Image (cartoon, rainbow, N blue to C red):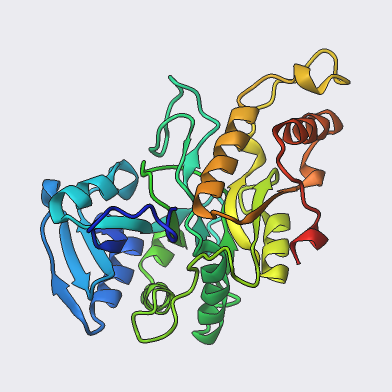
Length: 328
């Protein structure tokens, strides 16, 4: 269905869109390093002056001047301009954190916990989550390898982030980021590692592409993470140990739960958390047709009444819960 296993439009060429912006050094510097490699050619210009570059029949790099999170529907806009169908979007961006710790991060996008009328601090639309690109898990492993071989570790932390922010797209998407302060956003060595990640991960240098989903693969377990902090450490432990495919990762702040008067009744827990889980699960299922999708709970992040409510909801919805050993 969705690529990496996309919905195919009859007669349309399927391409990966890599998106960068000149407004962000952590975005444009990896893009420049990528474009410095052989094989690129100029492509059409989109509305708003967005420039494009082609690599063979399968990859397009879009270079714009606005912040990425404000550029909704780039997939549809590219299709209208080029006649090609976007199968996935890979956004290059900076990462900001209060810790100021240097980091290279990957994450899915969406704000499924927000309601109509809620403030959108970083784009998207209420109640929406993009299908998570199946490359997230395999690329996390490749990113760790590249960062170590280029001596960015231990200075840089290599980590996943929970699902958050925009821009809106209906296609499988992921963000790849450099953080977490201006000093690190402009680091040339970090930019080169991100460029290599895209180059090798998409198989542009003649290597095998990483992260192309197939329901007939040896491993078909897909993890949807529920609960925990923004950097989802307990979910990431399972992912790295088992090389599990990665779906949406909802941290505790994306599960708004209203404490009930009767904490023994899981059905009395209000809030947008049920919708957030349902949207995240369905978006993950769209990216992994035929996959064995399991929810992994960060049990320690929940109070007892919250955990009871979540597990009760998942059982009623027919959504399987997996323990760490179930992902092997």
